[in-house]
Amino acid sequence: MTTDEAPHERPQRVLDVVALKALAHPLRTQLWDALMAGPATASQLAERLGESSGLTSYHLRQLAKHGFIEEVPGRGTAREKFWRAVEADTRIEHGRARTPAGREALAIFGDEWLRLRYRSAARYHERKRSGLEEEWAASAAELDTYLHATREELAEMVEEYTQLLAAWTERLGGQSEDERPPGTRTVEIQFRAFPRDPGAATGSGRSTDRPTEGRER
Image (cartoon, rainbow, N blue to C red; front, top):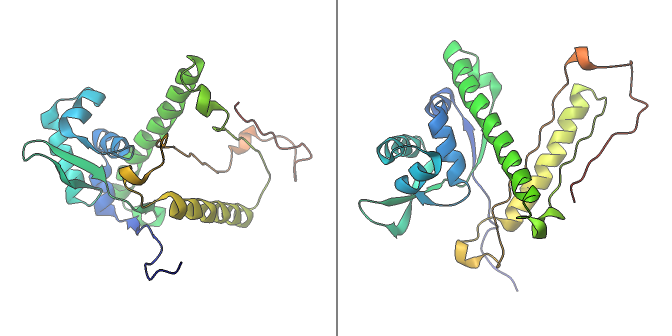
């Protein structure tokens, strides 16, 4: 079957200093992160995050003003809006945060985002230990590999991963809640690749040890 419809493509957004400063508040970062799991109201988010609905409402409006979230059309009431994260591949170019204000905003957002990622992974481990994720445990994974690489090799590796993730995003993205198969859940994929502290390195040249890889079952 042929179709004239273009494939689903997520818009790309590179944050400038103004947008980055709008995110540079721990609660706004938490709200943006929470809405990536699905739409919610200010009251629901307030209860989830242990804040007042007035405070969450204010920060939600600020996130909407800078294009990070949007109101869900046809859902909610005039008093209780449903919000959702804007679907986009959002990137931060560190070269745009060279000013003192930009570096400070990046530090505030980056520290909170990293804390949220750690907490999300820790909560999964807690649920798994409690026997609440038995059906998903065999599919979930944590992979840790240590390599010796140049900057160019690392950049190439990250680019290949980015393309793989983009392909899966195109394959799975663009579906409404009603179109998703039964059993669908929000899946968080964490990937970090960075040079280790030189003081922690041992030996010289390329490693002769086999990379270690751990997969959770």
